[in-house]
Image (cartoon, rainbow over all chains, first blue to last red; front, side, top):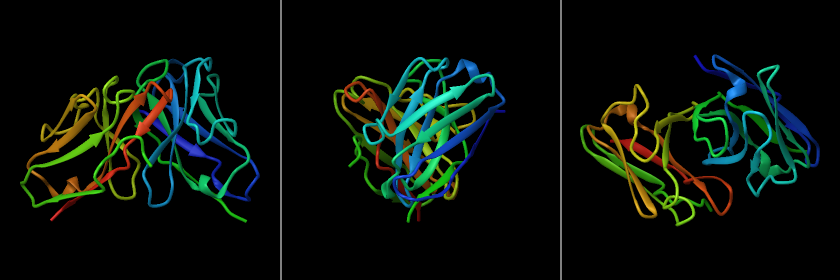
Length: 121
Length: 110
């Protein structure tokens, strides 16, 4: 069965960086697009980024464009989200999610359990 | 402000039918399929409906979806207590080149 396990969350000061990882198993990771979606405390879902199966296509939400970078290592079955210049409003649970096709848009069909990122001084 | 507009709440007694609406624009709902996600309290979201009206394996046929123009809707018939959750619509937006979600609808079974 599909398993997505996020790690790397925690408390970070405004302006600093953090990298999230998502370990994937139960499917051929290198064949599917992958997403990051976040959810601020008590708020709704906000899509952040998607990457194609081979890393050649990437799309970002305007709110994180230029600050966040999505990447993947197919040899390690791992998805990453590099978050730079963090702001208080980036505080959220970050979900890793599997797309249903190899290239974007690729609707989300499975979600991880999420990693909490808290940006606070 | 979300690109897709949903009512913040919906409710109904057990056994009743409830409909949740999702309003968008020509660049998202009108141009692309709509998906729905269910998020039970304290858990990660789960795909509930895809491509407007297709149910993934395991989703009861009490759930149905539809789309017309720039709007979509999710209907739940025969409401059960375990249906209490937040429901989100989502669609790809051609103008933004990204996915957009509705703000979510909290369903309460009275």
